[in-house]
Image (cartoon, rainbow, N blue to C red; front, side, top):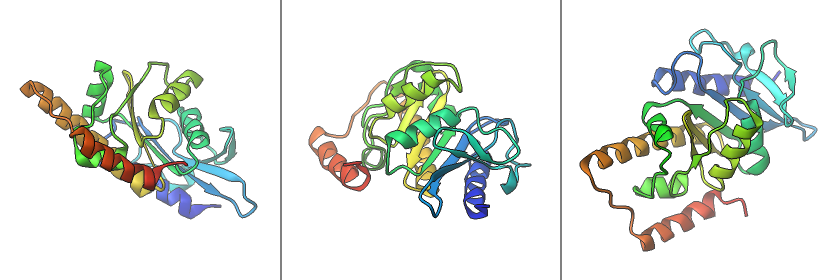
Length: 217
C-alpha cells in the first residue's frame, strides 16, 4: 500500500544521491502522512541500501513509535530521529538527512552559522545550530537534534551531517540544498576573514515572515 508516498520518498532519496549530498548508503529521507482512520505513518528509506538500486517497495512504513508496519527491510538507523522530529513539530511532514560536504565541514567545527543570508533567515529560520554529538541511531542523537533544531527548518549534527525539514518533501529538499549553499558561503566567507550578518532589524522582519509561514503556533 501507499505506493505514491513511497515513490515520493524514493524520488527525493535519488535526487539526494545524484546531487552528491550523500556517499554510498549514507543519509535518509522520510515523510509523514495519515491513513484514512487518522493514524499517522512514516515512509522512510531502508537501512544499508544503495539509492541507485532502491525500489519503491523497499521504502519502509513505520508508526509514530518507530515500529515497522510494512516492508521487508529494516528502516533507516535514524528512524528514531525522524519520528522524534515529527512528534516535536506538528507542521513538519518531511525530513531529509544528508552528509553533504560543506554542512559536514560545519559539523566538525561545532560553530553555528549566524544569519548571513536573506533566504537563510526567511526559509531556514535564521542561525543554524549544531546539535551536541551522540552516536548515530541513538535516542541521544534524536533528542539532541530535536533540541538544536527548535522551531527552525535546519540543523547540523556534530561530526555527522545535516538535517532539514519541511511541510512536504520538496520543501524539505529545497531546504537541504539551501543549507548546503549557506554552509558553503559561510566557509568561503571565513576563508576571507570577514562576515557581515543580515542587519538585525531586517532579520527581525524576515523572521516574522518565517514564523507566519512555518511557525507551530
